[in-house]
Length: 117
Image (tube, rainbow, N blue to C red; front, side, top):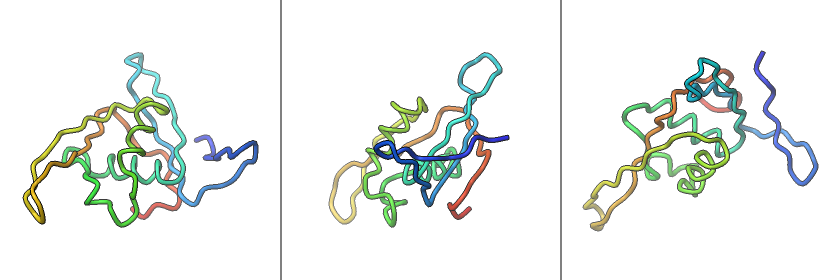
């Protein structure tokens, strides 16, 4: 049974609109761990898992991900997910570079609530 996704806010328990429970198999001991993600962190992880080897850019998820680099930072440092950033050149509308994020930790979705598949 998957653990329930609950977000703790200042001592209060609240339910997020987006909940995602994932199984992460990066311990190399055959015992995957469960991580419960809520809110934009859940949506970002779901996009990374769904897109696989194509990766994700901020522009591709810009309709809802206004702080993509922050979501990636939290997924890396709080949840221990290995996420690679590859810099790419772009030329339109102006020249510059952007990051494409790839989830490298072996993960699978256990439970998805509130995120369109």
